[in-house]
Image (cartoon, rainbow, N blue to C red; front, side, top):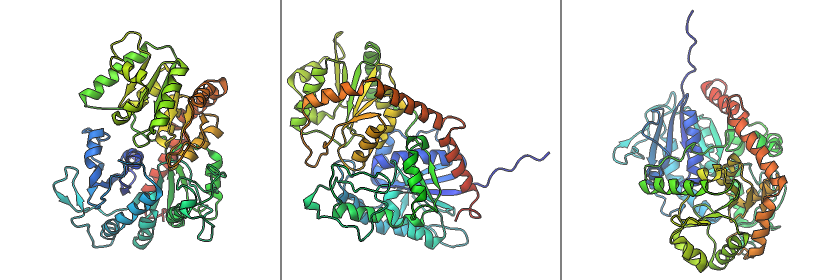
Length: 482
């Protein structure tokens, strides 16, 4: 009896912007694609060293996935300061010439062209042209305006990857009224066909409108839309996408949650720190520790830092505060004194750290609540950890995520906490939010969502089914995927 034939292997090109929160989810999805197909993952040369340092690729990574550096000429450090929409627009504009050159020189079937000198090998030394014809492109949503029109020209399917949940602003058109940026902060999000609400009750600004038009106008050209979420998280939003006149013809796949499955590190300092943190948490009671982290970009000003300090002391609970070193001097003196021997004291009730292994902390039975900036990656980690949250959104999609969390009963939302002119939240309000998040309803809701996330990624789950369906669709190229 003849052995069953293997599905034909395709070559998939993955493109993203030079921002760590966008790179990592797509890189994790690229690993899943590489189980069946060859993947070339393109990343800004500016980010290659950081990828190595964060150890999201290992030496045992299969040879189906190749990471190449693009000399895109991006001049500013997107991950070194809080992004605003104007910076995102400038970033895309800056990337366009090199990205266009790369795409138009890609080898494709029945064509004689190569990409010359644009890419570097992962070691950053040897110039390499992509020799193997590209069958499909998976691109970050922020690159839609550059990549999708060229995909149509080349006859290559372009699949749009969203590193967060949902697509806001599908109903925004060139005729949609907008107010000048100075009249409202760029952080204001428009009401949309997906979210069906306004954040901070502010209207659409000119910059937000320009951004939404840039990323949404080309969407009808997409061959697929992919989300870093699971279907059970928000079926209503996904249904809205499936019936919108602009996107109803496009298949939608939910392939999340996507983040590195284990926090591997060869850093002796991080290994030592993680062991100390786990040992400290092991001494705490079950569901007793408050974990606070605002991610790698967001930060609090001095007034807000002092109010947060007061709140953590008023709660009279054990806590871990992850805060970059340059901001720790703004903490109350009591906390700064306690930090000096926080691991040595037997009665230590808190840890203030420049870095914490977030998934390890959230996965520990002692963790009771997560005060978070509501970035989507952190939101997913909170769900997978089964930890109720206090959402303290700052910028970008975080207000939308925070409102979604509150609507689902997964988090208490602190309103008007954005970085561009938000209020100072008093300590009493923070305490109230934390205590409210510990009530039975939030515990029940987060546990139910955690189970749904676990089931989605388990064998036979809906995320696994969507990933398999997308991989099979790639295998069918070029016959069925146009």
